[in-house]
Length: 90
Picture 1 (tube, rainbow, N blue to C red):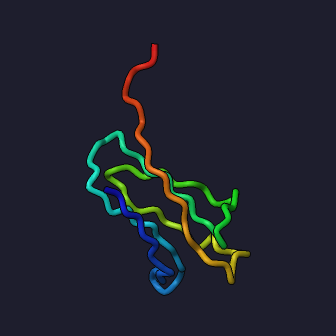
Picture 2: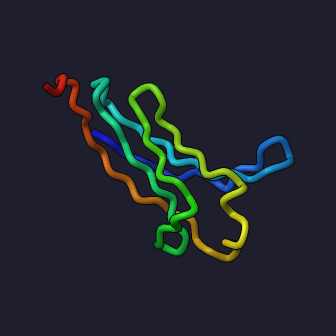
């Protein structure tokens, strides 16, 4: 089971603001991946990269630098799990 959640805004060291998407999951398969795309007013911004998470790294961070020119917009995210193939291609 996979359950992502949005955390933030969080003030870091009294200097910057970040948002996080934390993925709570029982999936331990090393092939599992999770795409996280942060959205502004439910729309993707091509200047904000999609983040690929693994079972070892389950937090996506939206850094303050991506918040410029997006004030007064609601931050949320799109999330999609997938598996990578480990088969060698011939």
